[in-house]
Image 1: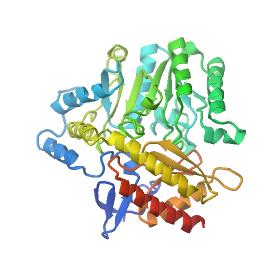
Image 2: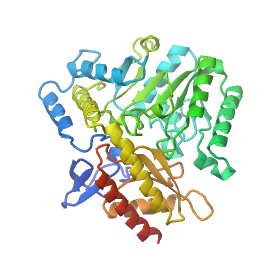
Image 3: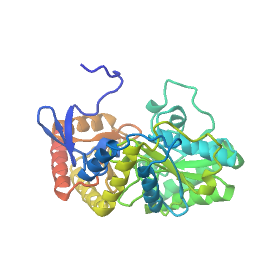
Image 4: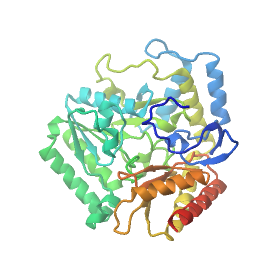
Length: 420
C-alpha cells in the first residue's frame, strides 16, 4: 500500500521495475513503450550505458561536494562543456536542482541586476510550482490555486498561440500582431518599462500545449527589451538539449536571451538545473543570493557530462529532428480520420495532439480517455494544454524509426477503439 499523498495522481498504471532505451518494464514482465521520458528528462533513454557508467564511477569516488564549499572535477568539466554549447556571450553558470529553482534564480538575478521589480510573462507559460515560479505560471490554475497570496510584480501578456486565437478567426500572423500590440498595452497599463526587469518566455509552450512561438514574435520581444533596457529570460527547461530538433528551442527563431534557464534533459534523469548569463550580468547578483546544498551534485554533473557527450556523438539532435518529422506526419495522417483531432502541434520530439468537440471547443475529456486507453495498449503518454485537451508525445531522443512506427500503430488502434 502506498503512503504517498493522495493528491499525487499517477498518469499511468505502470509499476516499473527497470527501463532500457524507450521501454519500461513492469513487475509482471510487461513491456511499455515510454513516450513520456520522465516528462522530457531521460533524453538519452532509460539507463544509457554511458550515463550509467559515468554515474557509477562517480558514486565510487565522490557522491557530493557542495560547490560553494569545494570544487570537484565533474562540475568543472560540465561547465566547460555546457558553456561551449550555450549561445555566445552566456559564459557564466549557476547550478541548482529543478526547473522551479532555475526560474527563481533567473527572477532574482533579473531584479537585482536591474533594480526593477516587475516581470512580464506570457499566457500559457509554465515555469514551476514553488511560490515565485507558480506566480510566473499561466498554463493552468491548478499550479497556483489555493495558496494565495502569490508573489506580486507579475504582468501577463498574450503569447501568439494560433490554437487559442482560432476562435477569433486569427491565423498565426494575426495572433502575432495581436500579441505584440498587447505587449505594448501591458507596458502602458500594467508594468511601466522602467519598472520592468525582464520578459520571461518559453520558445515552445510546454504545459501550455506544445505550441511554438515564431520568429517575428521573438524578434519583437528582443527589440522591445533592448529599447527599454529589459532583460530577456528564455526558459529552455523542456525545450533544451535537442528536444525540438535543434540543440536549443530558441535556435529555431534566432532568439537571443540575456538569461537562459535549463534543466530536464541535461542529465538523463539526474536532478540538475541552472541558469546561464554573461559574466558581467551574473556579477550583478547580490552576494549570498546564489547557493544551495545540492546544486551541482557531483554524480549529477558526471551524468550530465556523459549525456552531453552521448547527444553529440550519437547525433541525437539530428535524430530528434528526423524522428520528430516522422512522428508528426504520422499523427497528422491518423488524425485525418477523426473529427475530434483538431491539430498536431510541436517541434522535433515535442509533439502534441489537440482534441476539440463538435463546436471546436477544447475537449479535455476526450484527451483524457484517449491517454488512458493508450496506456492500456502499451503506449505511455501525457496530457497538456490549458484545458488538458492535448495528448503529448515526448520520447527519448534515442528513439528509432521502427519505434516511432510502433507508437503510431498503437495510437491509431487506440483512436479507432476510443473514438470510433
